[in-house]
Image (cartoon, rainbow, N blue to C red):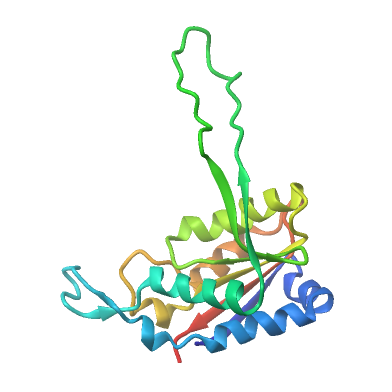
Length: 191
């Protein structure tokens, strides 16, 4: 795979490049080491492209996990969620909601968090605008990297997968809030 685009959200590229240069090298090496052609394994059932072979997000995620965890000793971080129950109105019969609930960051090393996202648009926004802030507030990370496909890569995936260009447009037009952490957004493409 190859790096196709970089966007600096809240000075993420500048801060991460300065504080974590060796981790930026590892991230780039992990991206380059994945042979995208090995992950074109999903046979389309969609009306617009029946039978066409597409890139499999699940397979691509496993390849990233193999690189980050297996080759570079990054680790996922899972946090148990203790959901509050004091906000239910009197008389409401609620079921305890926090059995086995958690939030997870894909990869963390030296307080830098990495999320790889081949899902819907809302997951990309959630990662940068909520999850990374939560993991910073909990003391696990200080900055983040979001790895997402560019439009040309998404064109060879099932419909509904979001992409770098629309994600960056929305972040630029949203602006930066005082709780946002520095995030480097990396757009990737198949070789």
